[in-house]
Amino acid sequence: MTTFTRLASHISFIVASCLLAAVVDSSSAHAAEAGVDGDHIYAGVSYSSIESYDRCEWVRPITIHEQGVSPSVVMRQWQGITWSLYVCARDGTEQFAWLPEITTEEVAESTRSVVRELIPMLTENFSPVPHRGVVKTPTWFWVNPLLWRPVSVTAFVPTPNGVLAVTTTATPESLEFSPGDGIGETVECDGPGTPWTSLLPKFIHSECQYEYPVPSSVRNDGIYRARLDTVWKITWRTNVGVSGRLPDVRLGATHAMRIRELHAVVKK
Image 1 (tube, one colour):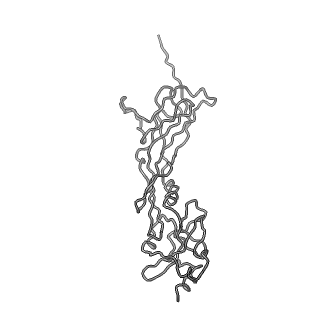
Image 2 (spheres, rainbow, N blue to C red):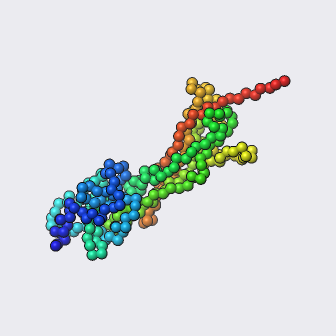
Image 3 (cartoon, one colour):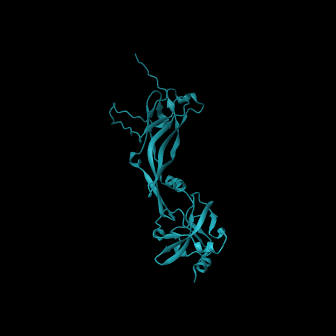
């Protein structure tokens, strides 16, 4: 059987052994993910091992061009991406799969939403607690320091030059506290903050704090709506020496701060 005849017989039925471990919904927001559309196998972004492709010698089906066949036979659109048909030559066999025409930056961007799902929601703590704050008294805030660590995900994409691996890492960088009183500016501090306990000596200071100058009773509902966010730095690197940074991720919650004003009573 000639190469052209063999290719023509497989153009609508791609060998199933090329299929990656998981089939994803084509409506996914991730760019150019691996998957299936009918009988066509798409060797795009995968987050699991792709050993079935790591020893491929990828070549374009040249013979089909020599026969004057329309380029649409070996190029198509899927998931909003242009894909090209390639032959995986390995161990004396030939298998067919579609490879995406995407850049390293596009692969990295597609991993941002994946690594975001791995970021834990850190419990936010205050001292005094939100409903018992006092004016001109520092309100400390912090998150669990044991969870203050990076999380990573690696995407694999077969390319004509070999498998491209892109590792994206989310690293907790700082806390941002917006007091919600319309007076003070947002407080940004590096690290998870210092947990407050009654055992701390008085000279211990925390950068993660804010002093409310005015009681929340000035508001109709008697509270300030503050927000505390953890800022995660998103970086990526590849197995070919390229690296970069993506927009930060901010995760947090809004807190109802009831700030009181205490008056001293002098007894004679």
